[in-house]
Length: 142
Image: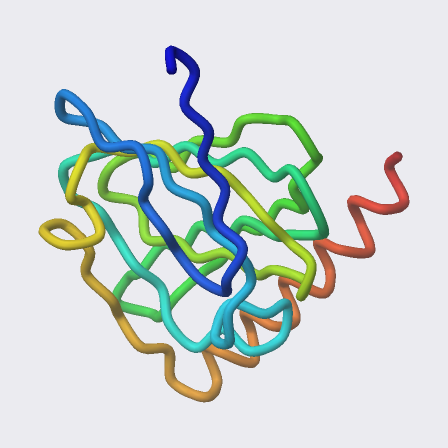
């Protein structure tokens, strides 16, 4: 067979095509990645990470962590558009229960280059407010 097919049905993250230093994965909704329950951010120091939403609703979150706390940039993702988070940028993804997306990044990133920072209650509340605003703002622009 010359054409390979990949699809992930279950919750969560599943890398399924790993080759020559890069990988393709599918991310489906899972608890902790909802539109209102994110409580951390993560960073990859050695790779950009590209995202393509193909079902549901999702908000891509970038975070800047400084001495005065965390600031968030949130974008409601559009189906079929490729978004990139550069290496070194803290981020997360809020997803509806029916959301599904493809992720492309350096191979083994989820094993060797993924660092998490928990958000305190105040930061998590600020993130939830920023996500809610992105959902409304982006909806009004279409």
